[in-house]
Amino acid sequence: MKIEATLSFLTALGLLISLAFTGCVRRQGRNAECIWPEEPGARALDPSRAGDARHLRDDVEFAEELAFEHMDARRRSRSGQSPSEVMNTCRNLLLKQISMSHNVPPKEVVQFFGRRSLAIDVAITAPFLLFYGSMAALLAGWLRRRYPPEDSVTATLAMALLCSLAFGIAGLLLGEFWTGTAESIRVGTGHLSYRADRPPWARHRIGFFAVCLTLFWIAAAVRFRLGKRRLTT
Image 1 (cartoon, helix red, strand yellow):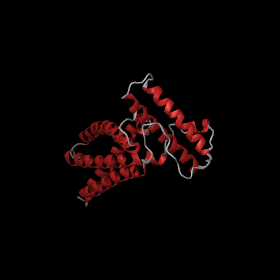
Image 2 (cartoon, one colour; image 1 turned 180 degrees about the vertical axis):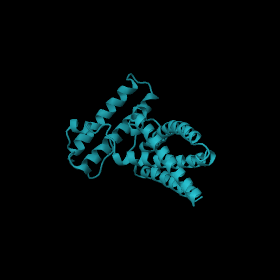
Image 3 (cartoon, one colour; image 1 turned 60 degrees about the horizontal axis):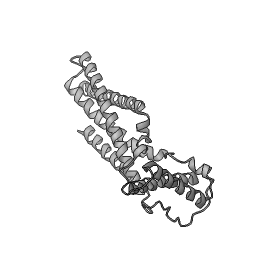
Image 4 (cartoon, helix red, strand yellow; image 1 turned 60 degrees about the vertical axis):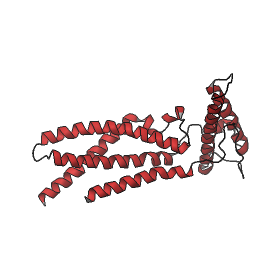
C-alpha cells in the first residue's frame, strides 16, 4: 500500500505542476481587432540577451494569438479575403509594431516566430511522464501478482511484452492529447490550428513511444525486484 500511496501522491503532484504554468499565461490586452496593446515602459531590446529574447518570443507568440482571434472574428463576417490572408495580414502588422516598440529589426523579430520555451515544454511533458510511469508501476505490480515468474518465466515475459506495447501505444495517444490540451490552456484558446504540431510530443512521436516503453520496463523491473525481495525475506 505504501507504494500505491506514493504513486498516487506523485501523480497528483505532477498534475499540479502541469497546471501551474497556466497561471502566468498572458491574458491582458487580448482583442479581436488586430490592435497591439500598449506596453507601459516599452524599451529597446537586445535579442542576444536571454531576458530580452524571452520577452520578444512572448510578444511574437501573443501577436500570433491576436492574429488568430482576429481571423476567427472576421470569419463570421463577409470579407473578400481568405481566413489565412486575414491572419497573415494582421500578424505582419503586429510584428511590425513589436519591431518599432522595441527597436528591433523586423527580420530579427520574425526569427522568434514559432520558437518555444524549453521550460514550458518540460512543464507540459514531465508531469505526464511522471503520471505514465506511476500507472506503469501499478500495472507492473498487477502483472507480478497475476503472472509470477516463479510459476513461468516465459508467460511472465510474454505478458510483460504485450502489456508494454499496448500500454506504450496508449501512452503515446494519451500523451499527445495531454500536451494538446495543456497547450490550449496555456495559449488560452481552443483554436490551435498548425500550432498543435509545435509541442515536442507531436514532433517526436517515435521518440516518446520509445520513452513510454522504457518507462514501462523500468517500472516493471522495479516492481518485480521488490516482489522477489518480499518473497525472500
